[in-house]
Structures are given as C-alpha cells and as structure tokens.
Image (cartoon, rainbow, N blue to C red):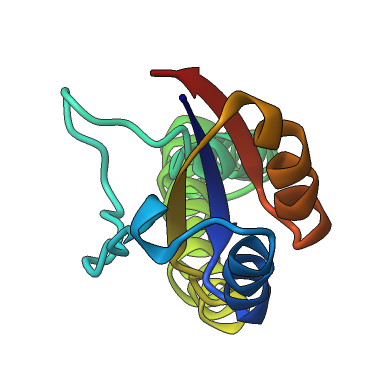
Length: 154
C-alpha cells in the first residue's frame, strides 16, 4: 500500500481531480481532503525580538535623514542658527519623512495589493492506493494542477 499526498489551491481543479480519481477506481473512503485554515489576523507593522518579517521601516528614513542633514548643514552656514543645528533639524526631518513614507507604502499600498491578490486556501489531499496505481494517480493530480505531490510507503 502507498499514500500519495498532494496540495491544491481550493478551486474547481481540486473537484475535477477527485472526480477523476473516482473514475480511475479509487473509492471515496480512500480519498481524504484536509482544508487548511487561513490566518485571519493582520500582519504586525513593527517587529519584536522574537519575530521579524524582514521589512525595514527605517531604511528610507536613514537615507533621507542623511541627505537632509547634509543639505541642512550646507545651507546652515548662511542661516542664523548655524550648520550644526540645521544639520540636526534636517536629519530628524528627513528621518521622519522617510519613516512616514515606509509606513504609507507598507500599510496602504501593499495591504491593497494583498487584498486584490486574495488569499487562496490550500487543501491537502491524501490518497490511499496500491503501488501499481501510484504513477497514474500522480499523473492525474499533476494534470489537475496540484501544487506539489509526495509518495509515502505505508
């Protein structure tokens, strides 16, 4: 005996694959479908010490802070407070502007793209079969757009 495990996005292709397997002689009792649940909570904006997603909210702020501090220090030679104060004001202003730009991009733009793309649930399909049927079943699963397959000898 053998088990074939396949993953599918929840779609009509999954239903067609199950129907094709039944036409191939696999009984309903030997087909097991497990739908996975989708994460319903929204992603966090700020990382913690235990969890990081690789998205930096300070990189644009650091670049703009550097650029604005150079400009502020250069212009500060002709202003009343001098180059040091205007360089610091430029650094803080540039950092805040870059931070707000990153927040806007990650919160509004990427969230909108994620909603348009949608989250497709994944279904795991487990089929019990004989060794001789394994190649044909795997061919049927690939024909109906399985995301991946695996064979397990029982």
